[in-house]
Amino acid sequence: MSLDHHLASGLHKQNLWRIPAGGADSSLSALNLLNLVGMKVIGLLMMPAGWFIVLAAVALLRLLSAQEVFVAAGCAVEILGLVLIIRSPAGVKGESE
Amino acid sequence: MSVAPPQGLFAVSQALCTLFILLLPLALAGLALINTGLSRSRSAAHTMMATLCIVGVAAAVFYAAGFSLEGFAALPSHSLTLRGREWGWVGAGRWFMRDVPLDGSPASFAALLQMMSVGLAALIPLGAAAERWRLGACCVSTALFAGITYPLFAHWVWGAGWLARLGMNYGIGMGFLDAGGSSTVQAVGGLTALSLVWLLGPRRGKFNLEGTPAALPGHNTVLVLFGCLLALVGWMGLNCAGAILFAGVQPGRTALVLANTLLSAAGGVLAAAAITRSRFGRPDASLSANGWLSGLAASSAGCAFFAPASALIAGLVAGALVTFTVAWIESRLELDDPAGAISVHAIGGISGILAVGVLPFAPGVLGGVSPAAPGIEPRGQFLAQVVGVATLIGFILPFTYSLNWLLNRVMPQRIPPEEERKGADLHELGAGAYPEFVTHTDEFTQW
Image 1: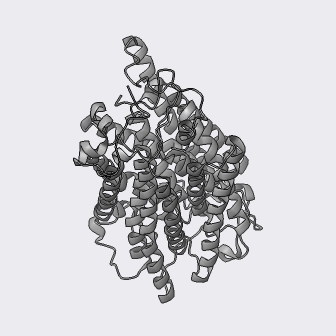
Image 2: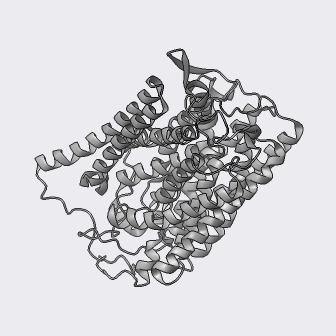
Image 3: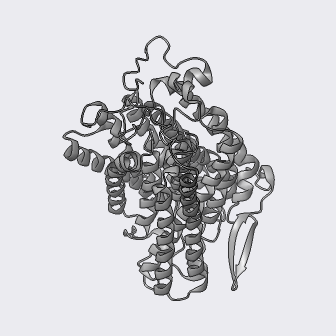
């Protein structure tokens, strides 16, 4: 939404939308595809892994400062997983494309 | 220390709960109008029809199974005991709400409130997946959402689960605080929207091969802005009922909740209008609508606790965030989210959750106790809120993605590309929303 109005009203300068989306990655080799899907799976697994670090910090540590450090570490792992999914083209293009 | 739901309700609280819950359908109507107005006219009837189906399926599934998994403070639950502390994981109620007599008890009002709020949460993904989500798949996906995802997280927050007891069990602030559903409704819905956008991919013609986004503007800005006004009334009902039922707020304190909700929405729209004015030379109507909704989403967590100035600040932050994240999600991440649902509900909701750990509370709330009170570590409340956000991103997002991925394998969720070009109305319903008034010219999507 939102940006669409600006794009339509000419504020966006790149008027290239007549080229259809999808079907562009046919040159991907099977190995590349495996890597791309692998990135996405690893990203998906890293998010719960980070969450388990957060849970462990809450359940096992007593000092608030130690909890904060480990919760921050868990959040960092989650964000890394999220970034992996986002950076994976297989994650962005969509399963159904 | 933790926030406890009330054990019983006086008549005035029962009357107020009934009144506030009656306002909730206006939030559904508002979100439906916003989603419809921001989609193209060729899919308008489909979006409204999907709204009715989603609300219907969500209420039925939540009645049949969802509430038994969610539970409530006084109802049985399955829990683990770790080092002498109970971790409530999931409710252990009977199916079809057989252990909840609808007699005016807090549990009965909580069940009634959530039969509607689960529909509100399930409508959020529709805005992101509009114009390309099959009606049948959207019903099954909603059933999974209302039967599993939503109740699970809502149990942890509102059903005396482990997040709510972080304060009591581990002395982390007062436990995870969310009176009106910034996490349970907004963030869970927004993250489900993100997973669906990942699965479905963008609408045809949205991005070119270089990833440059195309303009596919919504068809009716008036619907969008009117939807925002309706949503405000519905949100006031949601926040007030939630504050009474899940945070134990006294009836007189609902004046604070109402003021906070309005101020947060005001902050959101003013921030969005000012930022778009400075960036683009004029205020953007649809981004301002996003800011308004984002302010509402952010208001829910702290509506019962915030001082009014805090609510205004939370709204300003959420409204500012939404203007940048909508553009970032679209142009940098190449995700097609027609209604901006990910920015508004996931990011706006999360900003509201974190605001509870940072911004000052109103004097006298929670019996005069606040995270900054003597004896309570001020950093603890922020940590509790961060643990809640980590749970949303680390568990709910992969979980809801996996559920929808599995569903997509069994039942493809996306409308076939050629049918998408004709519009979801013709493909799914056999007729358009505006047969006599609108001609599709493919002005923006020629190929």
